[in-house]
Length: 170
Length: 458
Image 1: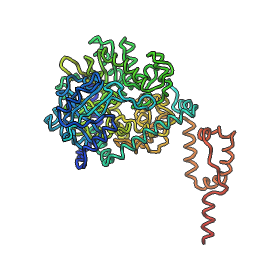
Image 2: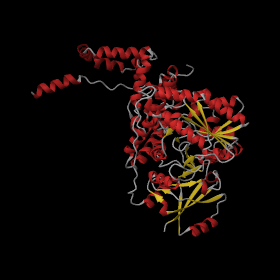
Image 3: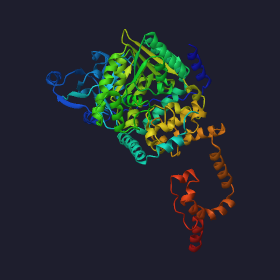
Image 4: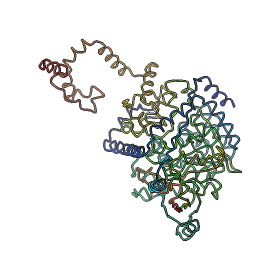
């Protein structure tokens, strides 16, 4: 307890006039083609995109795919500027699941793609009633990767080795 | 001081000139990737400004936000601890582990735990710690510290990694394939994740308004660790707190682009509550940060989000290597931070810079890094840690430059002196000319040439 008080006391002793807080509304929602940008970003982050007609089609695709330790999940939010998809605790069989599997499949509707991370968090705050986020949530932008050996990009460092987004485009 | 100075370690690093060029080019390549990523963001400069202002605001009311974070975290079921220094941080972590009889610990990258030298502390007490970021795992096997905060093994060639893995993991000798080597490490580390009793991670951002911790990795190692183990201990410097969820996208859009030129890291995890039946601990560490906050010249350095962009762009870092810096955080930001913690040990680092300002240009939170390096030099000089020769030279120049007549008179001999000094035997006299050629000296001085032209035109 004493370290807590000492730290807070030291901060109080260093007190200087507060720097005012400014909100940043840098959303780039006018982005004309979020879908094209999302597909492009996925290409760069190593995700494969497969167009499907609907959920049933996605399921059928998943059932015949050959990889073992594959996992099918559903995302309700994709981000165009970086190709990330959001998954939260409610959509996961366990927190470790999207990392421990070898091939992650995610169903995403093109309607649920927003332009920027600002838009993404605005939507999350709407879902979660402001800051009341779930116990765990994650943005995933492609498979696990590393370039720690002479800067050579290798997919599948510790987490999933492959990622496929089953994109419902209609 | 029980380590070599930056200058003498750098001199050793520079002996292998082919390797220096390789190191230099590799880091510059990452800098170029950063530029390419940044160019795709139309509001980049506005984002940097916003990030800087959010951090400046937060630091100016740091106590308020830390208390809010604490309250929220406790409500979420997180155990919150406060550590004044590295020793206390290590003790807190050890006590949590020993209470749970945790013998095997997996750690994901955390510069804070490097700063606190947590690994040796735990190992001395019988706890096995495995660094799980691939780069960190490689340097851990080699008993080396990381040489870069984002790219821990950037100083190593794949031949060295292959040899290390052959020795420790029994991989095929001479197989240099990064795919093969990464897969070998993956197999070993997967086992470690499933066997681990506890996971230690760092934190990228802690949100005060809802007590949520955000961790960014490319490998997924932090997630494998913390979701599989019974106990998760997250360690953060007190400057990592940000006020609201709305601030997150500002930093997340800057972080990976600045670090590696990626639009985002592969994983951006948000942990708010422990899974029922598991434990989540948060350790808030000061270790010199409040002292820095009290110094108006240096408090801006606490804005740092540890992206490493200033490393990759720094001509001195690229050509001297991370290990020359004898600190857990190298590069320009390390040279600003470390003397604040121990001036006697790290007072040489602010001089390992040309003050070219490239670091300040790439910094995503607009830390005036080269200005701070200059301020550190003044402080270090006043404290008497600058070596005599450097001081004498500077004083000599100051004396001469404030005497214009004498200066002009001496300039008449400058050309001759320069031609003489560029001859081989004299080169060794100055640190500057030992590794460099002096430019060839013109026969006439510029000002006399100019005056002559001017006269002729009249």
